Amino acid sequence: MKKPTISICIPTYNRADYLDQTLQSVIKQTVKPFEVLVIDNASTDNTPDIIKKYRKFGISFIQNSKNLGMIGNLNKCLLLAKGKFVSILPSDDLILPTWYEQWEKIITQNKASVYTCSLVVVDSNGQSLFVGRTFSKNHLIQQPTVMEKFYCHYSPLLPPTAAVVYRKDIFQDLGHFDPTLSTEADVEISLKIMSKYDIYYLDKILFAHRWHETQSYDQVEQKKTEENDLRRLDNYFHILSDYYQKHIKDQPIDRLFLTSHISMTLGSVNLYLFLGKYKKVFGTYKIINHYFPGVWWHNFDWLFFLKTQLLFIKRALFGKILNKKDFKEIKLLTSLY
Image (cartoon, rainbow, N blue to C red; front, side, top):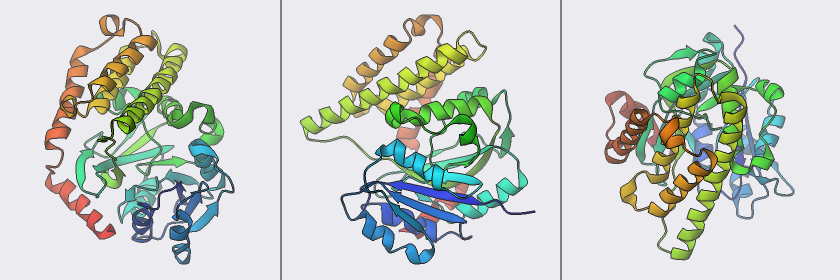
């Protein structure tokens, strides 16, 4: 059987601090990728110099003459990718050495439109914080139950990262990421995908997402960060509200849809309450009440909400305690530094 062609797309902007590690994770693949495409969005640091060092490894490099915005650059990646399948690798994240080999094998053996896997969240130094695992086994999740099953396992979205591999032609059907939705354009695409396509889940850690601590001792900077986070949350719930009114309201998944997104948002905002982000938490409640008035009393699953918050508390307290399987997979990360 012919092997699938997978394009690894790396949109980047001013990521000289981590890009070298990201590209190291790409060139250390056990199977050489079909295509690696890096598109620099008119960086003002030495990002282009770092990329040029990797041209000898067959990595394609395109430098935009002007900044297209994050979503514009992401769409350019999808447009130029030559593979039948495509995955987006953020320029501060990492893929494990067997990433391409595993996906090549899984896609050959299992037919789906979208593929996703377990992941590990690491800090700025690459130390593991917790493992993100949606399901405990490999399997195909088929329509019309995809959204329900992911929500029941605390995964309301599929962000465009290297934890996800897409058939490229689904974007001809869905359209590309909408630049007018700013950085939350992935929310709309994720909702469309989960309501329309079968998804294959691989219970193997192949991707490391870097979580950046935004806490600052500078009160002015901290205020700006919190205000920006709340603007993004407002945009996020605006998209959710629009999709809910058009496609979800009064459907069997209505209650689960609302509870899942609200629960995961509150958990991710806090990570967790004892970190002292009370102003952001209060602001988030205001946003939720604005877009979904009365949701707490009329259409909310409080038991599911409590289970979700316990999950975040567990991650905050015990996330670094790994089982043997996870430890073996995450140990591969040390070869990337």
